[in-house]
Length: 248
Image 1 (cartoon, rainbow, N blue to C red):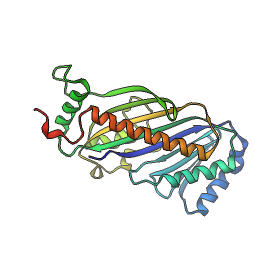
Image 2: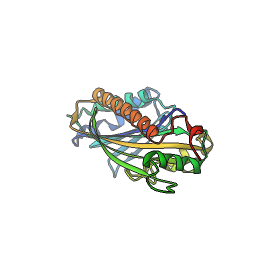
Image 3: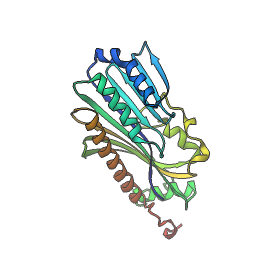
Image 4: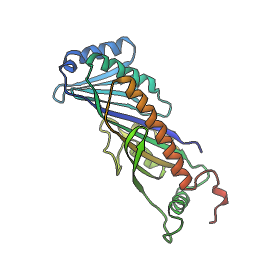
């Protein structure tokens, strides 16, 4: 049972800039020149341009006052998205990046437990049987992070296969809004584990970042932190490969 990060999303703001309007098409042209651009959309009303970077699992959306980017596959290529961000910021040249927010979703397949039993085991792990006959739970927590410095919101639970696409699209979350550009059909049900332990964490980074390089560094720190958090929660739920030793 190896935990895997299934989706990664970043959102960051900057001061509204005319450079966005001057260079938004240049950015799309350069992405096309680098064979990164598969499709794009220009929202004249909302002052945004969106780029699909070779496939729908890799996206970049630019606005006059910020950007959003995502890697939506466990086999995704983070450098592909980071290079597109670097290109965009090299042309817009914002003074600083602020209100950086990272969002990670992890899955750990539970191959030795069915859905009903997995929920009971996880609930007993978190609550130490303090609540009699607890058969299901959903956990939401607020944490503090030192690296990167900021606050973290996390939710965790056990999912069955049919629930997973909706959750990966951000639907049904208690800590983050849905992703309007990402339909659940992006993840075919038959490609997903039958039962999985799931976590989603949102990292709110304090202060400002100097540019694309520092954004990538902090992204890596937050990703590593989300992985440690996933491992800690799995251990707390007692889902560490010792399922057969538990009493029924």
